[in-house]
Length: 154
Image (cartoon, rainbow, N blue to C red):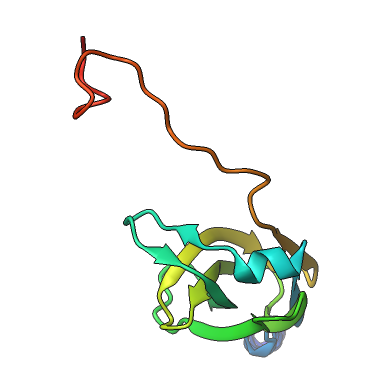
């Protein structure tokens, strides 16, 4: 009888411990995103050539984020607007969770001029991004027999 009582007590303690531990939620942590624009006057007036061949003048910098590997609930927020040089954003997510970040420069029509994506583990840290206009641009100069196809083999 004593054996059954000890086993029942052990079982009750085990069930209580398991249910108590499963009720503990992960600790939230605030990850900060800091964006700084170097030489802001030049950056905001510079005309960028995008990957798809269109021209764009920056109007805002936007941060997009979601949490987890297969999250479909991305959120977006403008952190820097034309004429400013600093912006901050706080993202609250479970400590240790995977956060997908996407920083994008948008023109006045909200078309993407440039972007960068990355994944980070949320430890409550600050992620710093710096944007700047290019130091220089120069034309592409090719030498060859066929000027209409500069990358064609000789």
